[in-house]
Image 1 (cartoon, rainbow, N blue to C red):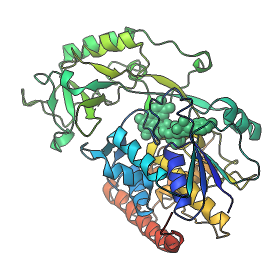
Image 2 (image 1 turned 120 degrees about the horizontal axis):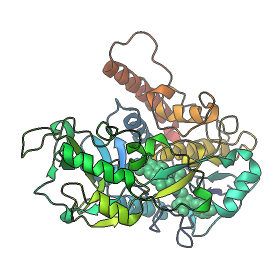
Image 3 (image 1 turned 135 degrees about the vertical axis):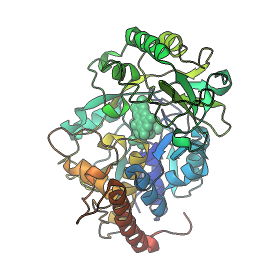
Image 4 (image 1 turned 90 degrees about the vertical axis):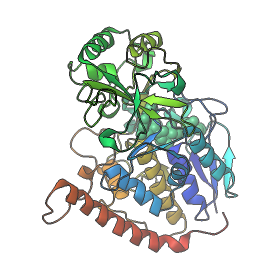
Length: 442
Ligand SMILES: Cc1cc2nc3c(=O)[nH]c(=O)nc-3n(C[C@H](O)[C@H](O)[C@H](O)COP(=O)(O)OP(=O)(O)OC[C@H]3O[C@@H](n4cnc5c(N)ncnc54)[C@H](O)[C@@H]3O)c2cc1C
């Protein structure tokens, strides 16, 4: 059988390569990091998490939690890796990013059917099966090759990354361990009084921003990953009701809820690194040091990585991609990951899973799997193939893009549970139907 060319071993490409190989399809997986890295990447490993180490909620009553459970039941490599390398994070699934990437890299290297090419792929073969999963920072010759297929490639928006701090540089006489609503002690909390909040807010609003590259000047910020200073510019209380909200947090020293709080989430299994939750930023680095050191407990914080901002490019996919992520005009060419207009680590991997399974079935002449919008997996494919309204913007997993529950179900919690029950029943049916496809020896 002809090898499938997978371009990029990020979250989507790694998942797609695994799904293909486990069905007996040989894969040539191209990853260029050892030769050239995109601006957000710092390691040579596969499936690198470029910003937060959280894969978000792990509850099936939440749409991204449901998506993860669906992926687990479909034997996702990314979920295997996440479950094996998780770090405590309350109700979220957060991972040790180094161990996570090592797990995925090792798993793919161990597959005889996956041939890894450590180089930059510059073209998309017109006739050979291919999955383009080169990520939101796709550039250079490959970007031109994609643009050669369609004008749809031209859209972009901006994403920002939050800083990471060494745990032992956080002053525990001021900061304290606690998870919101008393659900454990996984987060470090830096409490603020109103005076401290006001002073911090004023400094944040007047701090200097980092310069942008020429091609990044047309800034178009994505709501879901808005820099903290841009959010602050919306009003004095926006942060206090957003990433700095104190609800459900009690300061053990005062026994009271603070006026505002900065939360830090554990980065690594050893608990030596913490990231600032919701503090993605485009401030100049010396300004990050100056302004974030005003946060009680972070006066002497050592930053091992400052926040940065990057362009994030995606296809104007509706009308152009099918719901299995293949090109309508070229059925052997697939796209997967953030570049398709899904948004987030888990969603990127999910599109790789659907693309990998779908392409494998196509190559064996089997009928397509229809996940359908009553599953979170299927709803993402539906969204990129059809969009919603006029503007196509990248989309997280959410119940709003899924098929509504029929009949009356009272209460939000009951409705969320109904979505989850229906989706998982459908996924179990699909997984059962695909059981015979996997081969023992890959
Ligand atoms: C700055 C930034 C911060 C983000 N933060 C978050 C976050 O905190 N949480 C979240 O859920 N999502 C976040 N995202 C969004 C998204 O989830 C991630 O970008 C995710 O990594 C996308 O997965 P992917 O597989 O599509 O691409 P990637 O994970 O970026 O993988 C693409 C891979 O392709 C390789 N590649 C690219 N071009 C070529 C080529 N020509 N030849 C060979 N290899 C190539 C790259 O080296 C890379 O390894 C962020 C995105 C950006 C840009």
